[in-house]
Length: 280
View 1 (cartoon, rainbow, N blue to C red):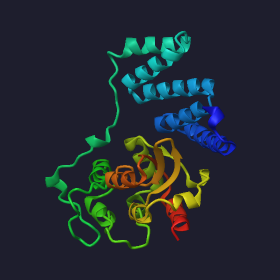
View 2 (view 1 turned 90 degrees about the horizontal axis):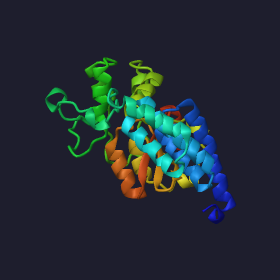
View 3 (view 1 turned 90 degrees about the vertical axis):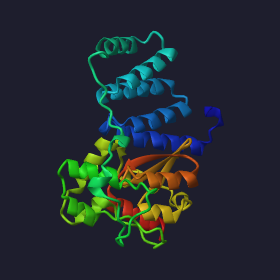
């Protein structure tokens, strides 16, 4: 309830709202950010804003071709606002077109490469990486090679599976290495990952990150995978990354943080710069 919130908590929620309103205006199909925005409004009991954001989420699902999710979202709105004409009309349109439109969701799990084609992942020292570690290599390889953005040899040279030893240094992301070697522009890599992983993009400088709070997270994990938590929303931890397909990083962070990881892509140079500021 709002009455239980302190002035500091209300201020933090308003900061979150301001930030995610900007994000969702530039990325209207970013359902992940819209969900966070709606939750923030709900905590402040801003019911009209909750309703408005719920409609935006449903519209985003429609634009993404996820009709089932859109219908569920609209039906959820009708439970609270049964006479809303906009929602009733939207549902009628969806009902009439549901038999002709096919959902076009992109499931991360669908990106799988034959083992016989690529072989086992190799680490920086040439040794085979442990089979149980899924750091996103297979998915990223398929994305970049299937689109003929780079050659297989280039991928193998640029992909580094970090050592489990604590080096005390943040590892440079794959897409940054590609850009540094002139193999693929960074902005195009980020655009590809946003589209395929269905995650939002957020510049580091748009966030008011509490450095002491960020330091409370496991330095070794953050440096190994070049990830950095930057905010918390209920049971979700918002984390910067340059590789949203890294299931091993998700596993290690969730085991430590006891929460659900929500990835946000950002510019690797800015991420590395802030990383070094946090874990100096």
